[in-house]
Amino acid sequence: MAIPISQMWTVSTYLLKKKLAGEKRFALTLMLEPLFRCSLACAGCGKVQYPPHILKRQLTPEECFAAADECGAPMVAIPGGEPLLHPQIVEIVNGLIARKKYVYLCTNALELKRRLPEFTPSKYLTFSVHLDGQREHHDLSVCREGGYDIAVEGIKEAVKRGFRVTTNATFFDGVDPNSARAFFDEVMAMGVEGIILSPGYSYDKAPDQNHFMGRARVRRLFRAILSNRKPTWKFNMSPLFMEFLMGDRNYECSPWGMPTYNIFGWQKPCYLLQEGYAESFKELLETTAWENYGVASGNPKCSNCMVSCGYETTANIDGFGTLKGFWGMARGNFRKYRDQNALKLLDEPTISGPEPLTQIVENDRSHEENNR
Amino acid sequence: MSVEVTKYTLEQVEALELAPGTGHENLEGWVPTLASEDDLRQVIEKAFDYRGDVTLTLKNGDRIEAYIFNRHAASTLADSWVQYFTAGAPEKRKVDYAEIAVIEFSGKDRAAGKHWEDWVKHYNERKAAGETNIALAPEALE
Image 1 (cartoon, rainbow over the protein chains, first blue to last red):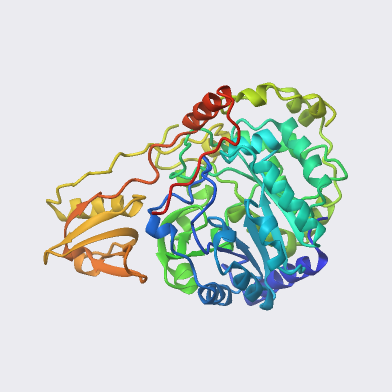
Image 2 (image 1 turned 45 degrees about the vertical axis):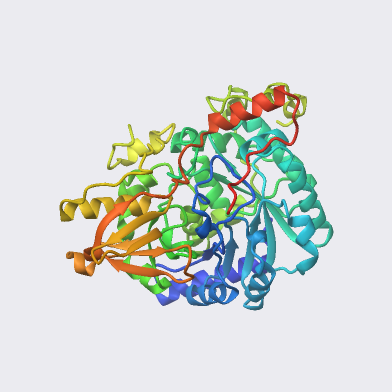
C-alpha cells in the first residue's frame, strides 16, 4: 500500500461526509494548472499549444488558494505546463499545505534537483515525477534525449531529502509491456513511494494523432503489465481503478470529481476536454451538461478515455462508499493478480506503435526477460 | 469507425483497438465570409477551438487581436459573447457576437504542423550524424 493512512483517512471521511450530505457531484482532487508554459515539447501532449502571450500568463497564489478553498477538494494536483517554471510555486505549495491539502506537484523534474532546497518535506507534499518508461522510451516519449537521467537525479535527491515522491507515466500505443514491468523495478529501486499510471488520452490538439489506444487495447496492455505483480511494486492509485484498467471492472466517468482550474477559469467539463469555462466551481457544477460526457453518453470524445481524472473518482467512491467496494479495495492492496493468460500476453509482439528508433532496436533486452 | 461518428454504442467503445485521432483543419490565414447569423456562429466555434490568435473587426471599426478561450452561445446574438485575452491586457475581456463584423484567423496555429513521425525522423537523422542531447524545444515566447 503506497498511500499513507492519514491521506486515506482524509479521503475516506471526506467521501463519507459527501455521501451523508447527499451531494451527487463534488470535487475530490483539484487539478490546478497555474501556467501552461513547459520546458518540454512532448508529441502526445495537448496542453501547451498556445500563443506566447497565453504561455506567459500564470495564476497568482491568491487565485490558486481561492480555487482550492472554493471547491473544497482534499487533494490538489498541480500539473501544467511545468509548475516549477512558476516563480511563485513555492508560495503556492506552502499555502495549499497550510490548508491541509494533499498536494501532488507534477513535474518533468528538469528543474527539480535545483529547486528542492526551496521546499520543505511534508506528508502533504508529493513530487509526482513524469517518467513514461525506461530511459530510451521516456526520452523518446518526451522528445528529449537525456530527460530520463535528469529526472532520475531529481527523484533520488528528493527521496534523499525525505520528500514523498511518486512517478507518473502515460502509456500510448506501442508500449512494450515487458519494458513497462522492468521500469516498475527501476523506479521502485529509486526509493519512490509508488507508481502512478495512465493510458494516454486522445487530445485533439496533440501533435501526434495516430497513437491513441482504444479501450480494448488499453485493457490488454494493463492486464499484461499489472497482472502477476512483484511484491516490491507499489502503486499510488486506487486498486479498484487499476482493476478497471485491467478490464476487471466497469465504471462510469465522474468528470466533476477532478475539476480543472487555470488562467481561463473552471474548465468544462473535465481536465481533458475544453468545451468552455465557468467563473466559479458552483457555476461549473450547475451549468455543465454532465449527461453528455462519459462512456455511457456515446460521446466520441469520451470513447477511448480511461484516464484517472474521470474514473479514479468513481473508483474511490466505490471503494470508500460501499462495503463491497471497500472489501475489493482492501483485498486489491495485497493481491498479486496471478494470471497465466496475462503472462502469455507478455510474449506477444507489440501490436503496433511508433517507428522504432535505432537505440531501442539495439537495446539489450536481457534484463526484461528476467522480469516475469 | 471513424472521426465522423457522432455517437458510439457501449459495444463499439469496448471493442476500440485504436482511438481515431482528430483531423486538423488548416485555418491559419482564413478570413471567412460572415453572410448570415449561422455563418457567424459556426466561425466563432472554430475560433474558440483555434490554438492561435484571431483578429476581430467590430462593427464600430475597432480591431482586436485576441486569443478566444470561451464563448456563450445564446438564442440571440446580443445575448451571446466571446471571452478573450489580448497580449497587452492582463484581464479577461468579452465582446458580444452582435458586435463582430469580421474574424480573421491571423495568428499562427500552435497546434499545427508537428507530428510524431517528424520527431522520429529528426532524431534518427541527428543520431546518425553523431549528435547527442537531441531534443525538440518548446517554441520561444518572444
